[in-house]
Length: 172
Ligand code: OFO
Image 1 (tube, helix red, strand yellow):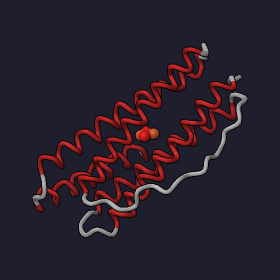
Image 2: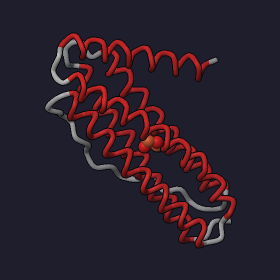
Image 3: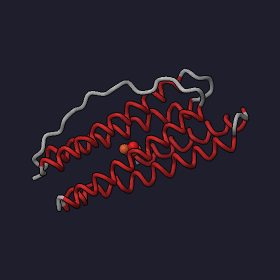
């Protein structure tokens, strides 16, 4: 059975994952109306779906362990970006914030001696390492490319390939 402190902390993470999903959905919608960003658009839509899946995983866990998951109200995310570089910089900033929040949650689990939740959270720890790494790689690439149009074309093509490959892997 989850303690009240643990339940509240997990519910805060539900909000964070919901906000992530919403933020990336806004990025996807922004990218969709920019010329030539088909790959980036798919990447953000998929990322938004993944964040929703992270939120659902938490909701089920809270409810299954005798807590009550709270479906949160959300504030409107950033809708417009000056450039692709800005959108990806925001993605990285956001992922770093989420990683910090997961670390805090692990700390609460340890302090509560809730080893089941500690164990459950290890999946999120690993996931954040991967998401932060990918966000950094993409930001580094964009730094290198700058405003070079052919570089941006290739970036979009590569990110489309990564997204499709990951999707095929998930469906296999
Ligand atoms: Fe939920 O994994 Fe990123 O934020």
